[in-house]
Length: 83
Image (cartoon, rainbow, N blue to C red; front, side, top):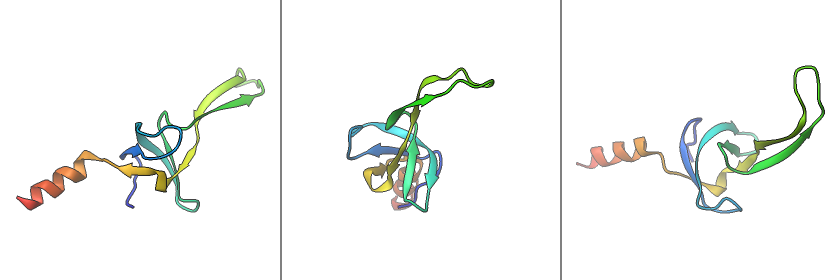
């Protein structure tokens, strides 16, 4: 599957099934992607001089087999080429 940063994808399995988001990061070695506002986890951090600390919510990786590419730009190109 051709996935790139910024591509719109739909989650097809897991706890966030049916949600749509944009790819933020790709790990090609593990075949995983990080999607905006999908697979949120809670991270407990210690306070430092730079950070306040506490409980922080952030995105975690999801396997690329659990996502489906729905980018409109590619669909438009396919439709235009068929006409």
